[in-house]
Image (cartoon, rainbow, N blue to C red):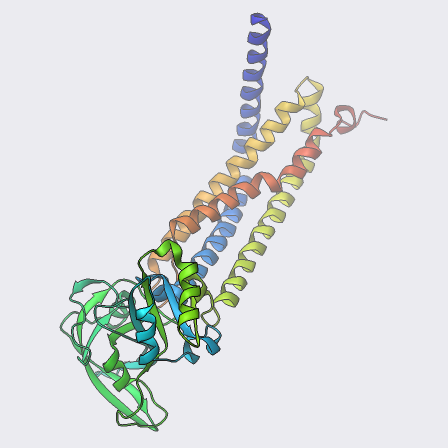
Length: 401
């Protein structure tokens, strides 16, 4: 029995050696052809990873601020259908939400779009203006400078993208342009802090105290400060974040005309987010499908071109296992080289793009794309392997009937 198992292991080692020898020998003999095909795989890899990075970048541009909120629930006006722009919550309902048992803290949030103008004549930069209550949920952490202190202060926290695109630093002053009625009004703000990445609605964000926001936000009619103060949504922190579903139901039952959802539901209902991500994911899927077809076609042509060689190998006693393993190793080596080159090219490209281009290649997205590409190589070559195993030696050599 021991001799039998030793014999089996010896055969396995011979199969592995012979298969590896055949695979490498052919790759080296036709290295130019296989290198060119590795370049084709590299281009497919670059396209897949580029689309993944674009999907991540555009997704961040829409969801980043809401996704990173230090809150567990977002409360909307019920009739707004989870559309932030249409939601309005007054101060009375804000107080009612704060009084619900299990609520730890609440923070009012308001959103608008304004422009940063430059004295030197540069093109104005459109930004998302976000109003928060200092020290409450919604105010982002700062990596430089300090937090907001005064509800009426003409101070602002720039998120990272806004700081990169404007070149502003802590202590700098800049001018905001806002449309009030039919006129342009200008407001001077001071940068007191630089935050992390918190884009909203595909725009860089600047965060101001909510009373300052109410003063400088665009208005269809100039109200001279006489209008009732209202907010778009409310960020809610809970004593027990794991119990958010029950708390959402409790808030809706105890506070009139509101709808409470988790952060994921909130950013997925950002206008255009789902359609945008669906389109990019479809593009990535079809790119992978094209990769399968291209790789399958190439290896199928390769197999058809070497049918006489496969027939000769089988005629002199080469086993089907050797032929199959050699083909698989060949496909894997060509695919690995191509994917590696494509990954390096994509990484290099991401380093050259300016901050204005929404390209973000994360480790998880890159790993998912690379894993899929390494899988579709052998998948695309299955047909060629099957064809190689069915080659009859005599027929391949032209000696069959």
